[in-house]
Length: 552
Image (cartoon, rainbow, N blue to C red):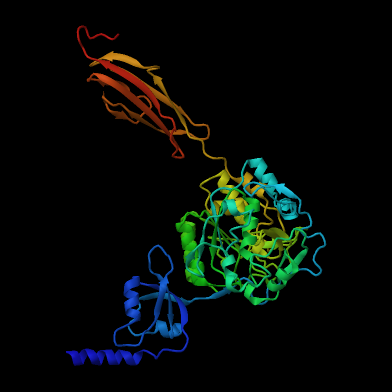
């Protein structure tokens, strides 16, 4: 028997390739649980097939990141499918600044860029912010202030941003930030400052000194920040910091639109702008399972992923609103594919416009990926080290829609993805290939149906409390009104009475055979399923029959 087992193992061993020098990363959906998959990846007396890095957070617990010396075909062709693979795909490496992106800073920079640094009050922003942030042209174009004041909204719920993280010490953001999570390091906290090594600070000091008089300096291809020249010089042209500050900037736009929304930083991209798809999947599942109401995704990929689509389906099924940037290649879709913006059942894809209301030259376009557009040029927003920056790109257009979604939730708490998309579709027309047009927050909020008003019930008889003797009956009748519908149901409860309940407006006589104090209750329900929040009651005092059992 031992000889037979050994022969089988040797046979299988011949089917397993020797381990290569570098492992490939795969996202695998398996029929196996984590422990079984780990066991199968490392069969006894055989070379390891793979390494299970960990689960990716799907609710079924069947989605994993694994590494293997095999390529994807080799993994799928393993004899007998020992890994129980349902489907598998390569773990893509995404880049916030892909090759070919056209969202570059104008040269020279506008002379008045971020020039108005007058401190002005802004809600939940540490006292004051720069006026060039609070009252910038982009905010006026989408009517941020008008929407907030006209509808009495300033943001509700939790808005998650899947990005490079955030500067948790920025005074404008600090009061609304949740701790978040860093998926690049597998640790709590979504700070992007962790990408700056404290042991070898690249600046003159860490953090760099504040510079209230600094002019705007380029820090990457699409961002100019108000930093001292030495700090800006370290960031500009340094691939290690190509996307540093991106998350803080995106969060600042969301906060501008929805200052009382809570912000959840989910760090899946490093400061060089790269991030694995597996971490993005983990972040989506994490956001949903940690009660996010909105997910902002200021990134895109041209490679389709079934698991990314499945994760966003899961978000949709849990009433999470999603917005994503349309990309910065200046191309039409089709033929270009842009994900996740292309999945319009789950996501609102957002293109970029100029202050003149035209499509930004760098913005991708096409109704298949663009649901709506929003300003994306010279967007003034928060930047690490307690300062501000201006950015160009659809990355800064998407958060206007995410912040707007938080305003919609503030007006109508149960707003879901399709309802938010319908509301946002009430926009300023821009012509062909730009979806429903440029975001108009006043139109979007105004399009929401007013909240359904619950019905009101009334007990018509008896008109007040009543005292009776045992064995006597009380005649009950009721009615209801509903200002925006019809009363569809009546529910009576008669403790101590016979009958003990009824579901008609006029139950008639109810007999009480036991002494005591009893409270009859009427609750009416309308055609929308809403019930009277204040059920109506009548107290019935039933006295024992001592002498002549006549009503008092």
